[in-house]
Image (cartoon, rainbow, N blue to C red; front, side, top):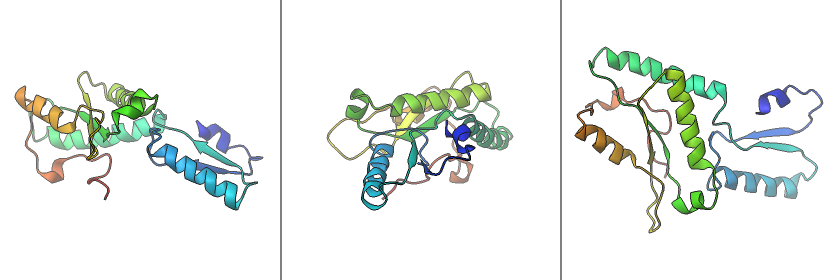
Length: 173
């Protein structure tokens, strides 16, 4: 993790931290590529340390745990049955995972760390915003997980204000 290195007073370069904690060549990889090209063109002597991923950073886990605990407290006051937890992330083409992209593994690792911090015995991971292409994208989808929970009698009908959103509320344009 970069935090220990950030304290080095002799470091005269820049840190590049993408706000997406999981590394995927379809997002973080492209940002790094463009940054590297820009530095080579405009400031070839500039030292840039790129943080590849931070999905397992304890402070990220703690932040997600805290958000879920606050939302769960409010919802538990309204609902008597256990709350189903679905950790979601954007989908990527399945081809990228087959080719060695760490994204899906890192999403699942991050979810497992948060679930452990919450003491959850049951939870799920799902992927959203699959692309409109002919190729398959990773899943399961959020919709399929909600359908499974509903079929098992675990679905809750909530107003949109009751949803805990840990990522973007809508798909990017």
